[in-house]
Length: 209
Length: 107
Image (cartoon, rainbow over all chains, first blue to last red; front, side, top):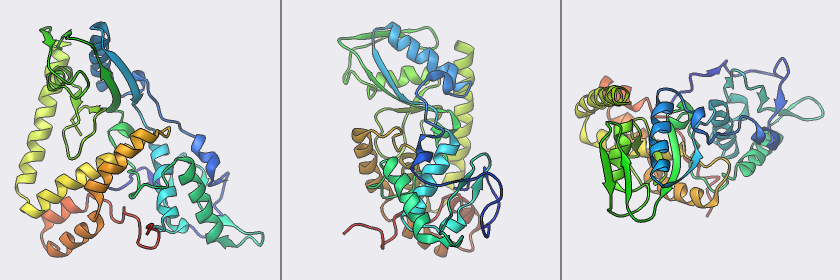
């Protein structure tokens, strides 16, 4: 997957301008969101209508994640790749608007591979990705504003309208976001349960991806 | 909401229809790889932030199932279909070298 938001080839020497060295402080930047209003229209409207219908019907809905800033995905991706020796800090492409220097320099102003990699490792630890076996992706339904992770549950039956105004009564199990009848209701709103490889209980999106 | 929902369904149907038609032209081993790799890439985008230990365990479980060996498989398929432009276009959409290198893998 390419990252079309990145710019510039490999640079030599210290970067020009106001660049801050990589390290754990970067992990507090561009924090992820868990609000419906951070989603991108029209998916935002679909999700608001679906979640509104669920809550009005008495379901418990906890939204864990909505939008992930592409800049944060950039930080997560490249610190992992540097820390796991999949790329040299010198070869990480810049991203417009992210003034991070992945390259560190020693007291003699000479590039230090060790310091650069250690700073990336500190970021991986702060993101708690030490055990992760692959690089986090640069792009996802979340970075596009079209993905939502939410925990849904209810007691007894659940009666709610679909997007066409038909009243649907769900009595089947499970009483969670994994209920197939609920998936059909969600799809009517344009909120599609994850339907690709693997199992992802909380994830819904505009396409099912 | 009804009109909005119908529009959403129409767009989704068109997108999925064109994707499916393109995938049908690919060899079986490539189609299988694409399905698995798209699942892998999905979970690569789900790393919990802020960190959440339980969610991370779920993600790591799915990543082990879907991503293990993906770099090698991609490389093998690219060699096999090097002269097939349609296949190569699809395979080139996937990022290379996403797995941990042998030197950094834990014993």
